[in-house]
Image 1 (cartoon, protein in one colour):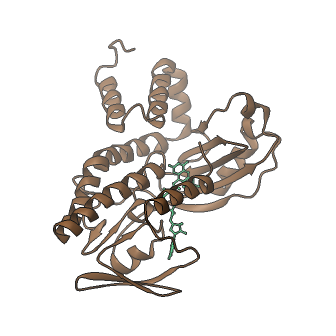
Image 2 (spheres, protein in one colour):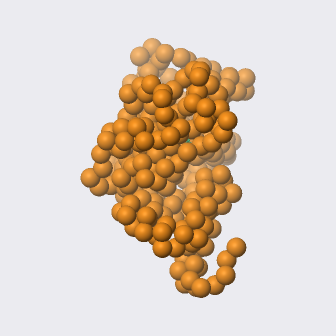
Image 3 (cartoon, rainbow, N blue to C red):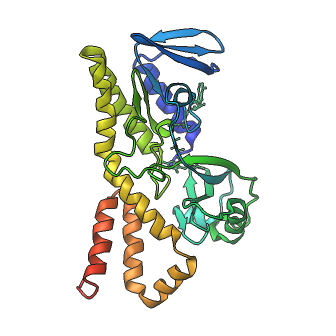
Length: 305
Ligand SMILES: Cc1cc2nc3c(=O)[nH]c(=O)nc-3n(C[C@H](O)[C@H](O)[C@H](O)COP(=O)(O)OP(=O)(O)OC[C@H]3O[C@@H](n4cnc5c(N)ncnc54)[C@H](O)[C@@H]3O)c2cc1C
């Protein structure tokens, strides 16, 4: 696990080494499409290009200007960080990521150990009468691995969760990732996993897929930009769809149901939690987890490992 400033600096270094020109401290303020290209206005100047890739996060200006009428849904997350030494002894000896399904009303809480620090927070993943600040305060008060730390007030962030609004199972992003000469990657394209809120992998991967499509559009035909939306749908479509269903089941159920299931079916419940952790570790897909769960419901008495 890594602190973002460190990771982001490393990524920027890679881009510059590969030939990208870096303009720091310069904000995009407006964009417009014209025949054969895109114009980007910043607080320092004006740029023209054949294509534009919006990688400007959840409140993407590229999306606001070039993808009007797009619908999307964000969920609230609160996060704080602890830097420096001493770390709690539990973190020193067992550098374990904590995931707490009881921390939030309809989501989860986390503690992620980093080098000389921790990040921790709560995210509320299912719409409803959530009170994230209350969940955060309770979580940091009761979570053992945070005991004795002075906790800075959390910062609130919206997470642009994929699939919450779309009923289009075939392609939830239809027309929302590519329009004419513009495409959106990462949070700007709402490519955030609806079960875990994981977005970094999808931001990086969508950037790679966007690069392939832009390359092909430059070399062959501008219409090849559309391939980007198709590849995103192929790689993430079903996974995100299933993750959204799982999210409604896992986080939507009252916590008392989880406690009851844990007490009444301890082995089966532990098995489901183990699978959830395997998804976190990237060892299991959402579709695989879904298959196992539905299989278990269909054949409740069959022996399982
Ligand atoms: C509290 C919290 C915890 C999270 N934890 C995790 C985690 O543990 N693991 C994980 O995988 N994901 C996590 N995520 C999600 C993850 O942070 C995002 O999905 C990821 O950062 C998306 O990357 P991005 O490059 O698309 O957008 P961002 O990282 O948001 O980057 C957008 C960039 O665009 C710049 N920008 C914006 N507007 C303009 C403008 N007008 N002009 C110029 N530049 C502009 C911004 O300054 C920023 O540098 C978390 C999110 C939150 C809110």
